[in-house]
Image 1 (cartoon, rainbow, N blue to C red):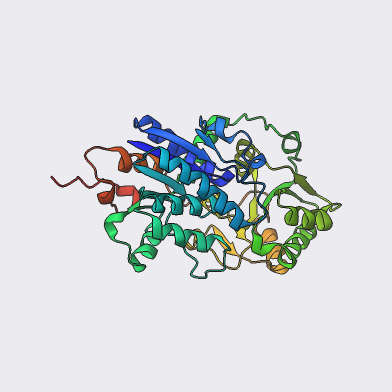
Image 2: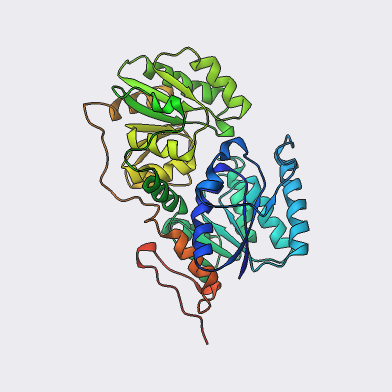
Length: 387
């Protein structure tokens, strides 16, 4: 079994790292294409999961627009796929890299396996361009690895056959558990600014990067954080994304704000460490919505909609958009008292075994991937191939 694993951004590396390890343990012949869509943000992640790229994308980061990036990635993958024959091309999520790779594989008649398939908001422009990307990938995919039963139902409504869908859980839970075990309780953060965050204040962890938030929505969110820093009992920790629009807004609003620490993009171990300390999280990230429940954290989602409604239904998340008042009220409510308000419920996105299930589907000789169907991760049983 020869498989090409494709990723470009930090979240893709985190979510495909465990898949790489599981496929390697299963004996697959794996090549890795890294488009380099995120370079600085990927610091240490490849080593963390033991991955060495077979191919590195060239000039992708030099392209100013998404269309340019998409085109360059497609051209580079097309060359590879004409030279090497793969049984599967595996992509994850909804990035430009994933959409370009799925399109290149489809046009080269190589089956596409989509990890974290089936997420939908129902609004093509929100989040932009991710909702468009995931729908394009869904059209190209031969096999859909979905994180939840709800994601499966989204695909069934779109006409995807049930035997092309496997409900496996979300691989970010696998990554999180793997890294949390590696760093251990006595972990010393790599970033000195993380290590020196005051222990006597209630930590509010913030991540912001969505394109649709840049501008007035982002400034309203940042003003809410400035208000919260003025409370005195909290420390606001914000790893600042490298997007120039995000950085400009953050510096303008929070540059001199009290009790706000602006951090460099974090090594994933440092980020996991901070989630373990946080009282709550304010985020527009999809991945953080999936990670936070593992820590029992209740979070505020700074978006108008989410393709992960399970986090809300399970009681871990609240949609607040860019509403300054809702953010301030929500954080103050979740930081009341002398103890963190953690929930005992299970993470609705997985149990830490999604990557093993994916590897089993793709590599077991007695299981046809197209027949690897299950209704829920907790009772996962591969269907036997018909004789």
